[in-house]
Length: 269
Image (cartoon, rainbow, N blue to C red; front, side, top):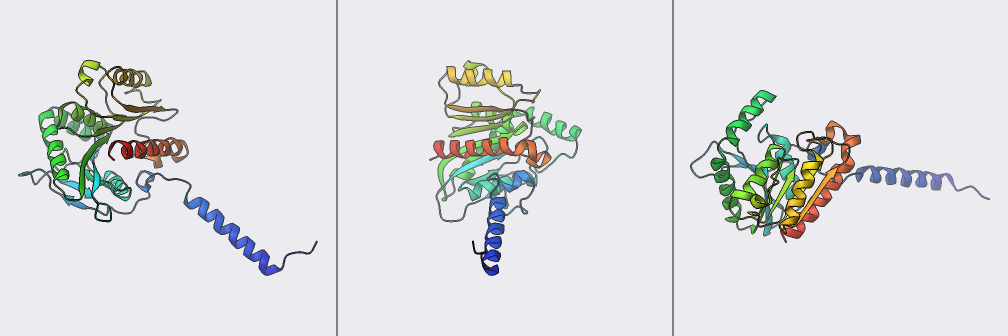
């Protein structure tokens, strides 16, 4: 059998190399932000609470005229930092007007003690939290490029806040919780009027799988549509910081991202 010409062999090698590079470029569909690989935030700082210049959120807007559905992102216990801003950018790329709220009046924590002090102060005045997120909703709904559909989501401290807001704030269309504190009483959860998404971790000692199961069962018992999942072998905080252990966290993070996009696409359409 005749051997292929040298130029043909070279072309085959180049095509194979390009194919490998293409495969490497699409190994994950999750946001670069949670891999620690996103560029600097691309959106803008906004004041969304009238008369409160210290509270400064971050707004990321899709390209095009819209209108688009909207998301309010609630930060973790350390405050509104660039990782959350970059995730807001990722949602804008998916076609959502994303507002990262600021519950700490511009402050961030740099240690466990500082973070806990901010959490205690904020949790100690839930009326102010509700007012903050109500203002965030109004800010979004008043924009010409927003459809009027709004979801609220958060991680850890922010996930618990998202659920608390769902039970006590102005109407919105969906809540997404990433390993946030839960409510298990069906009578209290009956105040919900929209679907709920939840991602949790098997190794999370603060919010163990048994508690998540009771939460999901309570939602089912009162007829609240939900998509709740506990991921094996990962711990609290795995999704927002996949780069902490990419080999372990990337697969569950990708599945959680795909579930979230499907959930938001369904409930905000």
